[in-house]
Amino acid sequence: QVQLVESGGGLVQPGGSLRLSCAASGSISSIVAMGWYRQAPGKQRELVAVITNGGNTNYADSVKGRFTISRDNAKKTVYLQMNSLRPEDTAVYYCNANIRVTTTLRNVGYWGQGTQVTVSS
Image 1 (tube, rainbow, N blue to C red):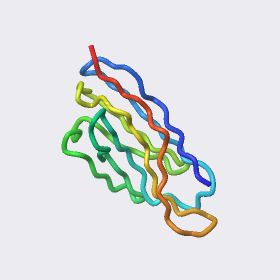
Image 2: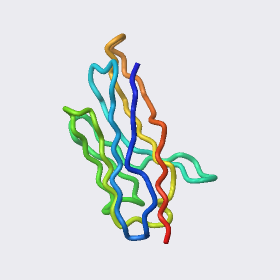
Image 3: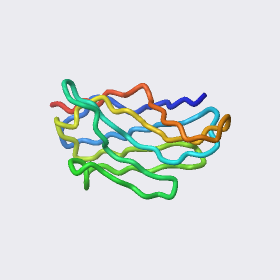
Image 4: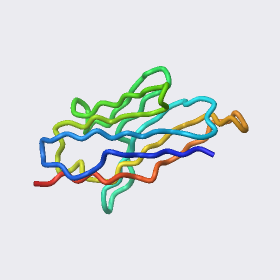
């Protein structure tokens, strides 16, 4: 079994910054990729950013230049540094990981429980 534990959400004023963290633990052989998605009320869940084991990154156009994704392979943790936050960034942010599990050596996708980010004055 694999667990993803997120932290770092909260309330911030427009223009402010937050950093989200997501730590993976459990039956992990290797982590193929980790990323962040978000879901605002009444909207579909959307990709925010993803980073592969090799360090390749991909961002949604709406966050390019403002958000930075990074990972610490030793800690099995991914981070999302969010700067210049806007009210439209308000959403529940979910960590996602594509993990090769030790039990079957197959790649399996996992989700965190979500963390609320609210950008408001």
